[in-house]
Length: 72
Image 1 (tube, rainbow, N blue to C red):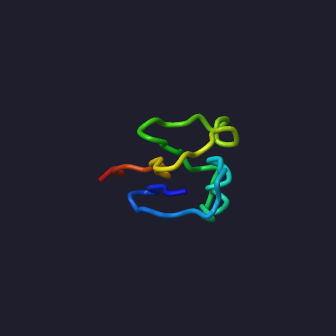
Image 2 (image 1 turned 90 degrees about the vertical axis):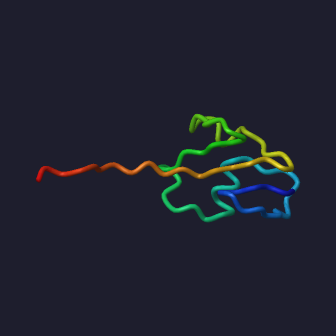
């Protein structure tokens, strides 16, 4: 299966793969803190284990960081 993951083209040697499987396969650190965009749509976390990936899908792993400008 050919995927684009975070802008990089990759070939995955699996015919069936869920978003959760991909997180494990790619050894994503802190998977509980990652959001996943699939073909331009943000997935709900409860969809990770049921959403099947397809050939040529575009996947982005997004980490939202807290913070901002402190008082000067």
